[in-house]
Amino acid sequence: MKLQTQITIQKETKNPINYDSRIVLLGSCFSENIGKKFEFYKFQAVQNPFGIFFHPKAIEKFIQQVVSKKVFSENDVFFENERWHCFDAHSSLSSPNKETLLYNLNSGIVDTNEALKNATHCIITFGTSWIYRFLETDEIVANCHKIPQKKFQKELLSVTEISNIIEKITSLLENINPSITLVFTVSPVRHLKDGFVENTQSKAHLIAGIHQAIEQSLSKISMKYFPSYEIMMDELRDYRFYAEDMIHPNQTAINYIWEKFINTWFSEDNFAVLAEIEAIQKGSLHKPFNENSEQHQAFLLNLAKKKEQLQQQFPFIKF
Image 1 (spheres, one colour):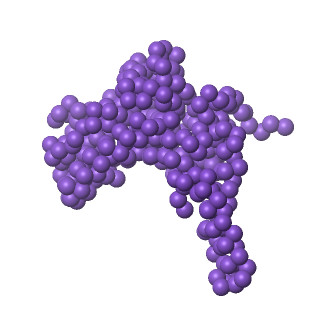
Image 2 (cartoon, rainbow, N blue to C red):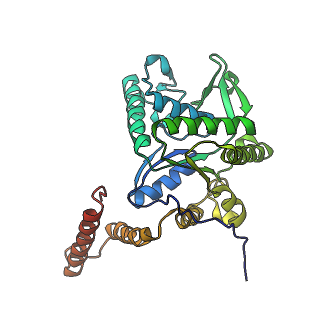
Image 3 (cartoon, helix red, strand yellow):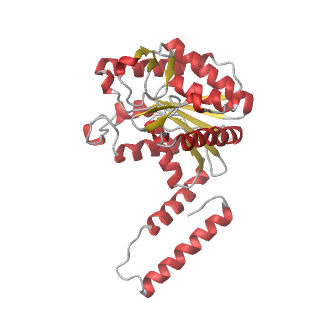
């Protein structure tokens, strides 16, 4: 008996992800969730150096800045509510110190440039088609930083605009790393502050725009779509898979989508390593009744040996 509909996802065999892969994750908060999984399992992954990006235009602008090695100056930041902000970055980078913000912005550009040049995969998650344009400068912002909404104009990116943005992203990355594989996905997090109908329209534009770009692409870069939004909406269409806000996926849902992702994108020889790292990570969190017991000391010794063996195979792994 089947108690849910199952989405058929084709196994990726051309350029699967393994422990030699170098991954860059950009986009909405769902990128953060998957990024934490890559971090837990000790992959070589860089995650949202400028913080969360919600819409495609912000990601395009960031990649343009990274490829061109933009140097941020005091003209690119502003002071509001006792903190320095940048419209091109998430508020997680904001700081009470202007020099700190500029340092983090410029360091992020340099580090991401290096990461994208050497990346095997770039996973991009779009969250919404809605954008905000700052009226004083006619600039589309990545984050409004709680500035009054009357200072912005809200707009909806069309399917064609999203497709063109993806084309620009692909072209930019092809210039610095023609062998990179791009994986696009749409965040299952619903942006209900925009409205229920508006959120559905927004997600539809994202999905249609991604597929249009992939189908029409003339780039040599491999472009793929992973249906994280569809998995959440169809296979997990029950509120027991949501957090208390009834908007964000809970940990069960995140784990479920992660399993779907690894079964699609990871090479088979990775699963034994994944299991070994998970055992080590859980073992490191183990709290014994008696820290000085022989049994616990033997457990720690065995754990240390497992770590050493893995680090000999993968020197970049640090516990």
